[in-house]
Length: 333
Image (cartoon, rainbow, N blue to C red; front, side):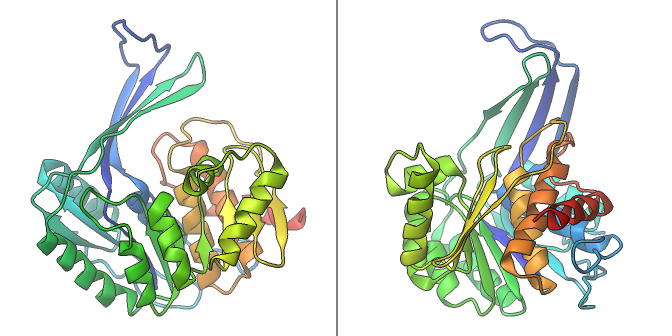
């Protein structure tokens, strides 16, 4: 099983404008609402990649409780992808309804704090994306304990775990470290700052910051590729098995203590880039779960990210198109 877990999902509004002008009235061409935020994007991408016809080896390709166990990866395991998240309020109910309608296997820890609402503004004329991000509200110690208990139950059955997203106010920065310490499977960690650095001592299998997040985490300027590679190697020295760094549409870098590899993303018409890093993390998890080595798993993740940017709603992927893109990447490695 692959588990996606995180504390800061979002109910997302996507506003499409012909042209966005600050300080003026802007009339939308289209408005959509959907479940999003890093943990939900990863969970949705995992569901897409594992619940349609299985991806070919080598890159070819209900109720509010969401207790749906009808998905299969190649290894034939039932309920292969599962999402664990903290939700609350009307926005949390909307997320639960959407996941149930999509058939995504999930487990919810209910909070008294409403799930945050974020807005994406897509300016078609400028080709720009603007994000209005609400920070997640604080959660109670009892809610955090409930999430921790649920996590350990789910992670005990998982071969790969994706821990992703920022931490709400009041949650200690060592929270991910403490979870990883007792996680039997391989962990992909997608966070930044102190939670990332604190977790390194527990040797996560993969850490996946983007270039800006890596610079902020290490409190340094990263301008050249040489500076980027030194920063990645530092995370490996401090405990990361692999470091995967994204740079928007630029090449993705993969580093261990002994290897340094680039992956050039395939060209794609950009509709909405939001969630592409989350789809990359999901693709890595699926690749690892089916037995790929890390570089090939990253190629699958890059293919998933490229498919994501061509879609309006984040992480709702076509697995056959992802597999085709991954084939091209593997052929050109």
